[in-house]
Length: 182
Image (tube, rainbow, N blue to C red):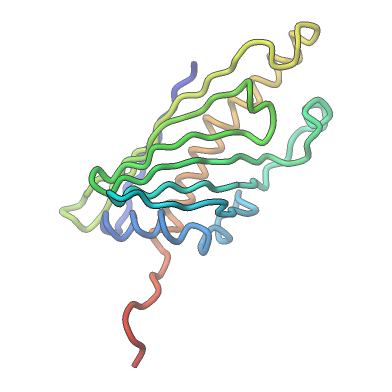
C-alpha cells in the first residue's frame, strides 16, 4: 500500500471554498490545465445534509504507447465517489481508475480547515493506493511492475498535483450572485 498526502493553503474562506468545490466543480473544471473534462454522474443528499457525488474525470495526460497497448485505452480517466460532510468539512472519497478497476484500490479524504484567522483555508488531501497482485496475469511479471509504477505515478503525483490545481481554480472562482438581480 502506498500513502500520499498534499497540503495547500489558500486565501479563500473555508465555507466558500468548501461550497465551490462541492457545488461548482463542473463549472470551473475547464480552466484546469491537466483536466480535459469532469462530468457529474450522480448527486444525492441524505436527510442529515451529507452530499454524495459521483464524478467522472478525464485527464489530458498521455499514456505511453507500450502501456496503452496493454491497457487497450487511450486516456487516463477515473471515477470518484465522494461524501461531503459539512459538519466536519471533510470529503471522503474513493477513486476507481478507468482501467484495471478490480486490481487497483484508492481511497482517502480531503479536509478543509480554517486558516489565516478565518480568511483562508488549509486543504489536506491524503489517501492510500493499493495494487492487488495478478493485474495482468502471471506471464507478464516485468510488464506488470512497469504498469504498476506508471499507475502509482499517476495516483501519487498527477492526482495530488491536480488537486492543487483544482483547489487553486476553486479559490479564484467567482460565485454566482444570490438573490434577485437589480
